[in-house]
Image (cartoon, rainbow, N blue to C red):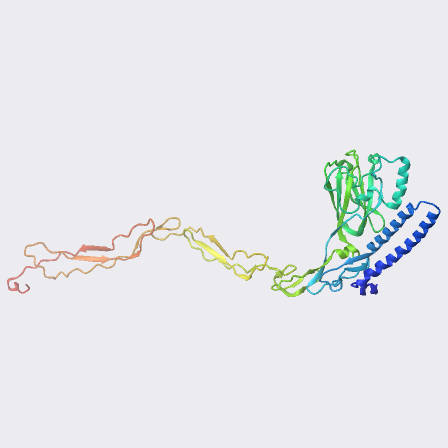
Amino acid sequence: MDKHRSQLCSTTYKKTLDDAYKQLALLEFQGYAVWMHALQLLQLDTFFVVLRYNKTVTKHKDFFDSNTCQIAISNSVNVKNCTNGNYVYSGMDEDVLCEDNYYLTSKSISLYVNKVARVSSEMSPTTYTLSITFRKIEKMLSLFSDRSSAREIIGLPNVYPTYGNNTQAWSPAPDDINNPQFIVVRFKDPLFVEEINIYETYHGGAVWKIEGLNGDGKWKVLMEKSKQSLQDIEKANIYNATINIDWSTSQLKVSIDCTKSGKAVQIDAIRMTGRPVKGTCSWYDSLSCTPCGCDSTGSYSTTCSSDGQCRCKTGYKGKRCLSRDCVIGQWSAWSNCECGPGKTKERTRKITQSRYGAGKACEKTKETVDCNLVCQCGVGERGDYCEHKDCLMSNWGSWSDCPPQESKVFCNGKDKEYHLQFRYRSIIRNKQNNGAACPSNKQQKRCPKPKCKELRAYEYGRDS
């Protein structure tokens, strides 16, 4: 085994294996040549010898193909420099190592039938023209040539999506359609089956059971439905069955019932999809070295774990550390509320960590709500919000002084003269909206009547 590992990338590895099988085939050919020459000397037919030889060569080729894998995985450490691929024995279970900044991934693969193991019935293109005796000869020849309509199910679809009777698809013999029929097929490698697709090209809808052969050699049901639910689909159709099993299989048994249509159903191909078993050629085919792709901002390094997880910095998330959620602090207390129309209160909070990439966006950092407070109105205020305010005046000031009573007043028979007193007040608040207007801020009144003095003769002119 170590020798094989050391030669994984050797360009002579495949040539060595090829030469070994060529030598074996050559020896067998020489043996058959001697046998054929002997038969010719005995004047016997060499037709069967040629068939047998061709079958043996094909068998050796199939053995080589099934026991070696040609792999070349980019960005791997141990299987990347092979110019013509790498040839390893199936089941060698060689670990594939990836370069730094890469990690190993595998994917589900799809396989098509590569061999028909058994069939309940089949219709050869010559079924209707051959005599009974010749049919027996044909059946005997098929043992050597493997030529039968069941083999048409091998490989990729070559009839689908065309609908109609076609000899390039498998079909049971018309005489057998009144009984349940089946075909057992093999695939190159076992898979943990996830999905099975059956390409029906003539009177589809007849598949009623699919079984898989487990590791113990027992058939286990993968899908089964009642025969009452079968259909006669007169168009090209892909029957799909979703499977979920924890064991692998490389053989399927597909059972059909043609009684719904009364016609011989035709199946062009069968595809099996699933996860390969480690060490098989299909497992190598499913592998690839995938870039880690660690984000330079969100990760500590460019390397990742075996499952592709980068080492993220605090707050960053995702396999590649490509995103960071926004983080916001706690709400502050609500501001004080005031009465009146349109009055609001609010609260705020701060962003403590900003968003990055596809992270969760920041929620709002400010909330505002209406106060809706009914005001307690003061003096001269009216309305739900005390919006109508009367003019508000200060108290009156003191009256101005009047002239003293002793003032000299010359009456001389005329009316007495009057003096006025005044007082004032100031505007504290002007009116608002529909409030009362401001009254006068000034008042006046007459002083008390003055007393007249009679002028005496000796005073006449003194005061003039």
